Image (cartoon, rainbow, N blue to C red):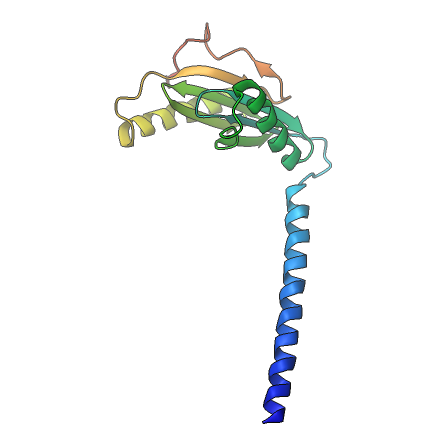
Length: 166
């Protein structure tokens, strides 16, 4: 009987130590994973858009910093405490585009502007067909180039419709 109690106590101690070690390594690994930077000079660009249409963008060497900065910039524009991090896209050395379709957002990131426009048109078509059949026409809200610079909205003016596939 005493041997069983001793083994149970040792088992709980070993299990507790293993759990603590797993937690510590998991926390370290998560912190490490959040700071992805390959050191090759390529930066992460993040574009985020709140449900009201406010957006923010940032380009950083570490993805966690880019996400935090983009959300903070969106929050400054929107004035809201919540919502700016609900939708975002990330990319390295590529284009990010955001469209507003009434109250709906479409965010896409791709290696070229043409690919981003094509993907956005496909996403709009799918959303209209499957989820929101009466969705208003989409309008360009923002485009971010591979250097992280906000480019003029896609199309001749900010109210232009989403570029269609030809």
